[in-house]
Length: 202
Ligand code: GRF
Image 1 (cartoon, rainbow, N blue to C red):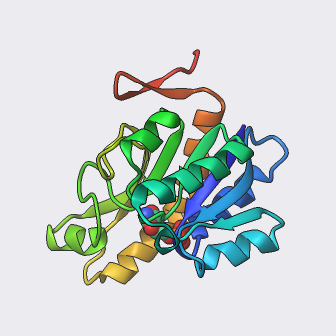
Image 2: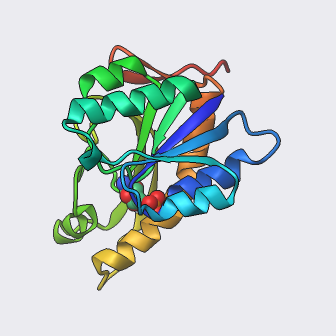
């Protein structure tokens, strides 16, 4: 399966995906990385691994629509089967999502549906949570809302700062994302009637 990864930042999840997909028995390969920021740190990392990279910056376009149009036409050329959002800090429109219905997944650093959106680690600490974690889910129109494919948990430790918790969660993100992508690429999970369903034959 052909995968395009969308990033806005450092791209450590993208690198974890790249490392996993490089294994000979992995059912998907990353064909390109698209960023919405010209200086996204992950772009250089992907390029250093020989992956095609594209920066499509929002301010270079007159509207959100025009920006998405540019991304969509780039995608036409890449013909991905699956799009992985990995720290991509923009909400995709319904039109965009429909074009790749059930084929866009995202990682969010909380145990959704708890703590969608920003400042998720601080909110988990403030809420007195004793576990935290991350979620890979299908992308639907709401932010961090789509059906869950997989989750991983870590403890919240006494005295944790948001940064300390973020770092602990990130280590399990790097394991969960490749596992979840594998399930989708192998056709073992899919989205039906707005729910994630297991398609695995047992
Ligand atoms: C990760 O915590 C991801 O879950 C969140 O943004 C962060 C991106 O980190 N949505 P990286 O760019 O993958 O290093």
